[in-house]
Image (tube, rainbow over all chains, first blue to last red; front, side, top):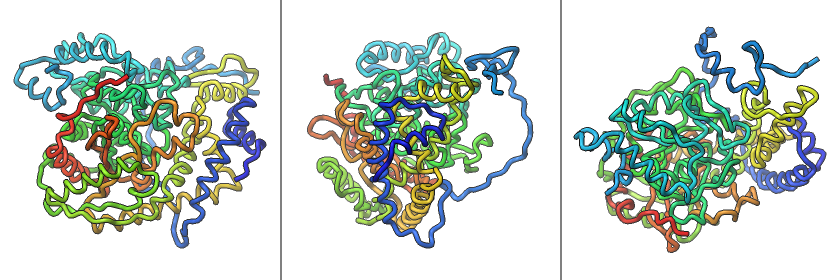
Length: 94
Length: 474
């Protein structure tokens, strides 16, 4: 299974993940090994089979879209690396 | 005999008779942790003011919690730098349900539950109480090692591809992965949502049934949880398994299974036969492709689930950045360890356009096949008997450099998650080096009672716990 370093860089970009040069090389090699192994599923005959979405047969479980207040707002904010005036503080976007 | 050597049902009896109080139990466990934690290193966080808490609740039983289950009173780190200081604003549903418990501490794991040896914890390794040169298994390695070392009376773990059963097998304790939907995952940090399940790791089968009594049940906060009748699983425990049909799927006994493990499991089958069960060889050919299917699906879901760690609302945040994009990218680079990154890349790859059909879509079709083959087997058999792991616990450092070799440790456990079935691992013997061998019983959906009963019948016959104890060999 051939995997190029460009593909690994592309995947990391899609996942918003920076990689070091060393990591790019390591993961290129790892993906070659893992995908060669994963390819074996393409030998399985799956004609006329649907895809499973999950472990049981329960799809589209709906509930009413109701707003529920979370009492402890401080607890929600206490984990934020940066907060200001009771809000998450993020760098300028535009 | 020290209190820490007792099971929870034995402790409960003593509490009922007022022979002891929770304070005695906690003091005894804290003493044990003081003695053994330096060798085993099962904990990420040890609880504070436990004796004061025990004074307020004199019948409370201590428990250890895998560090990916959210607790308000202690950090929930997932053994990752990403969540090193994270304190959850709410408790997981299972934590609310184990009322009358005292959380002794949060237990080590592979980062984000990705691994089979607990060597991928970002903080420290955990060592196997039977031989501290060996891994405890993973990813719930801290939970299994702490129970085996008597540092907690019982624990909660999580199982996505074997993460409760395999460490339970490596550490000579009991581990149950319940049916998908039986136990709420609300507050479990998500790894692969169509596979994840919380379950008990205990000293014996009775405790396993007891802990399942607490945690099972419908929860509106987890849309995948199923409405089931409240059961007392301890009522199912009996020695009578006469006429029980047990299938031995041959794919679990083939290449790659250590001969000594295979021999031990076949001996278990013999014992069941002598107890009146009907043993028959059977086949589940889709199992040969289950591991590849599992890694494609699990990593695809993980790459999506881990997307939330962006350094804004909680968790690690990179220090230097010039834009929001750079903040995301650096946060993930610095916050995730090597295995988490590997799975993000693999998951992104199999979901990306051009590869989606060949990997992800194909894997979802093989998943259907695995489910169908199990369904067919359960029209003929009540339970299936297999090894839990192809080998006993391996030496520390021998597999952590080769990801594929580490993935092979899950070969006997992943199909159960793919099909959403319940399965239990029970210790049966030691190999000639003195390491525990575990066997796995797989049942049809929501047949936990039958699984527990079958496990219990063997346990009463073999009495592994009375014969063997971890020696902390160095």
